[in-house]
Amino acid sequence: MLVDLYCERTVPGFWNEPVNALTNLAFILVASVAWRDMSMRNHADRLEQGVIVLAGSIGVGSFLFHTFAERWAEQADIVPIWCFAGSYALLTVYRSTGQDIMRTARIAAIAVVATGSIMLATRGGLTTDADDKALPLNGSLQYAPALVALVIFSVIAQWRGHPARRHFRRATLIFCLALFFRSIDLLVCTATGGIGTHFLWHILNALMIGILLQALVTKMPPLIGYPKSR
Image 1 (cartoon, helix red, strand yellow):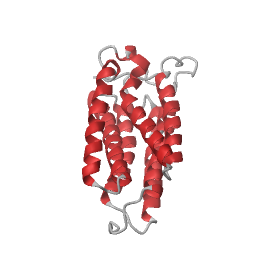
Image 2 (cartoon, rainbow, N blue to C red):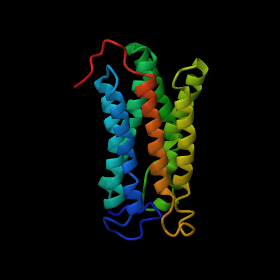
Image 3 (cartoon, rainbow, N blue to C red):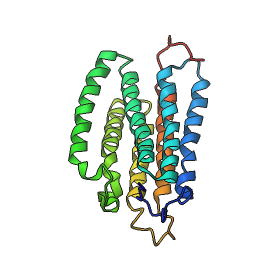
Image 4 (cartoon, one colour):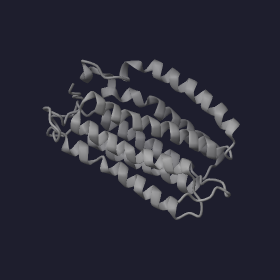
């Protein structure tokens, strides 16, 4: 079943969204840069490596969605995004607590309840259906939990004077801008010559993820004593 959510897609076909498809290379680029920077350190861990790989997989999943545009491809797009978001948040909390497993578990439990509550409150914009184009903000409400998490991370990091506070603040602002362009894609379709603005969501979202990865790699490295993975 064809999933037609974006301005650029006009008919079924693998290459009907070339701009939306090709801009997914940005995710692979920022993941590659983060991997390089991580490799230049004296120590790393597999948790960090896994988060970086998930960041790159967002580009792969989104490419599949914007080429095949079918239900299975939609899941290939969504699953890596939320796997990355959850894994990054968990690892960030883990590093911020001095790699204290019990404190991390308590915070994670609170986060799960909060995320579930936000998803229930915005459930009208979380899924696609037969009338996809009628979704509020073109379906961008599904990212409300991610935005709330970024705001919370930014506030806490600023309050504590954490070295990554500027990274979180910039990432939050960029994500807000990315959500704006994702939301207006169909509204400005004619004005943009049938290209829309969804490709800007990809570019800005990748930039946001790149900043978050830099925060993780450069400002929150694993504690000394964890051998570098080879």
